Each structure stands twice: as structure tokens, then as C-alpha cells.
Image 1 (cartoon, rainbow, N blue to C red):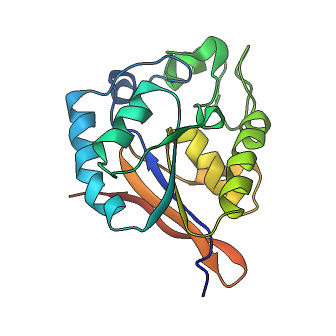
Image 2: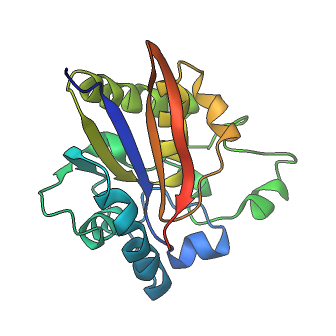
Length: 192
């Protein structure tokens, strides 16, 4: 019997900016030592899965996390997995943004000179279509907001429903099926 398609998600480990709540879209910053330890701790969870293909964001924090998972197979760099482009809000915190735009969230209001939720959805829809075209499990190593949009789109929800899926650094999640319905099989699981 053929194995249905699944997507395993791993958010990259901690960075200086994720630690401080700074929106890190296109700035290519490294993992902290804590982030490297988090990625190593996630490795057994991922290694317990039967991974058929590995996709990673082109940014260093995701590529390094992927390498620290020690999967023993090559990863394909997929630009569709880049983090949300926060435009003028790159490097700022939500608190700082709300000083001039009260009640702002990435889910409800635009990022000047950046992407919208629908822009991100168009990218992750391509990743999902590719994964669903293959049997087995696709591992995706990327970033918090793009993975939350991917989860929402896997379930057939609007991109803004990603706001419902908290996703911590270096956690493992699994999207799959219950019969013909796409479901969340595991969410935001931290390694030991």
C-alpha cells in the first residue's frame, strides 16, 4: 500500500532576533548557541520519521538547523520557503510597530514594502502541491510565519488562519491525513 503524502515541519533554532522578538524576514542571521542546541534536541524526533525528501529555506538559520538534524540525506534549497518579507518592519518588534500602528499584527495589516499573507500563501501553495504529488514524508525546515501559513493552507484555510498556530523555535510538527481530510497530526513538539 502506498504511503500518503505528509509534511514534517521544523522551525529553525533560536537566533538573536527571535530571542528579542524582532521580525526576521530576509536578514540572514545565524543561530545562537542555544539555537544550535535546540536543533540538536529536535534531531531524534525528526530521525524517527521516515523522511523521503528534505526542503529548506535558503537562509543560514534554516540551513544550519537542517544540517544539525543529521538526516544523512541532502536538502534541496527552496526559495518558496523564505520567511515572510516584512519590508520596512524588518528587524523591529511588534511593540515598536504598534507605537505608530495600534493593534498591528502581521496577520491583519500590511508590512510596508513587504509581503501580504496572500503573497506568502502563493509560495507555500507551491510547496504543498509538490509535497502532495509525492508519496511519503517531505521535511520542510524554515521559519515561524511561513510555516504557520503553510499549516493553514495544508488544512484548506486562508493564510491569515496561521495566526492560530503558535510555533516555537526548533519544534517539530507533522501535517497529514485522516482519510481524505488534511489534518494536523502533531504540533509544536520540542525535543528532549
